[in-house]
Image 1 (tube, rainbow, N blue to C red):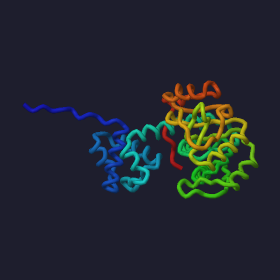
Image 2 (image 1 turned 135 degrees about the horizontal axis):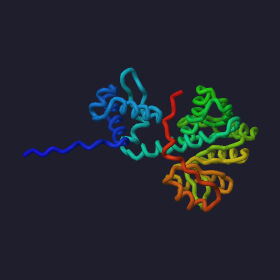
Image 3 (image 1 turned 90 degrees about the horizontal axis):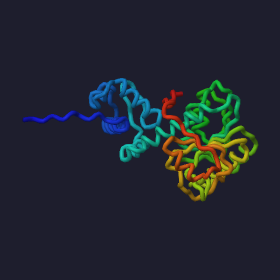
Image 4 (image 1 turned 30 degrees about the vertical axis):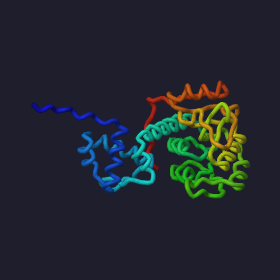
Length: 271
């Protein structure tokens, strides 16, 4: 006799990988077709696509979506990259919701600080100083007061660096520096792969009352070539619940470790 197997429901990360695969091959596909292919509701597909749009993996079009293949390739070959994106968004949201109205904030370059700025409240009268042109542009469109440092613009991520950026940062005193790091370890402190970013991060920390570092668990114990900041100069590391023990092992009490709660996470609104 025939034996029929019930089709397993895809996990959210698997659905999003499938969406990218289909959109990349078809160039555009409508929500109704995606819903049928994935055996989910149109509402679920819209939510998944909105996530992909917010993370920069595709752009909405009339009745469908198109993939950004340069960003999507890593997801197609490495579904775990979705977990990293969600972790960074959760970290960014938690940090942004703990800002004090009226604060002057240095914000460093990077993908996790990019998540952080998306959740900043335009009504909190914040002033953000950043060497990242994409960060500055996004904040300006949201109505947040922003100061771009100026400097030499990198072609790959539009980050500004060099003597002009350093001189600009040195002119200000901020309540808080919010930065990322390529590595955080007991041996090397905060480290970066780029010497100029390392220098700017160090300057932002020196000119701030407090420093928050936003980092997912992959940064715990990692070391990059250029030392940026000693652990003793950091007040708080914000991570996810699965990174707390790893960072506590590395910092040995040198700074506070905060865990972004799972329950608070919401995707940011588009500008």
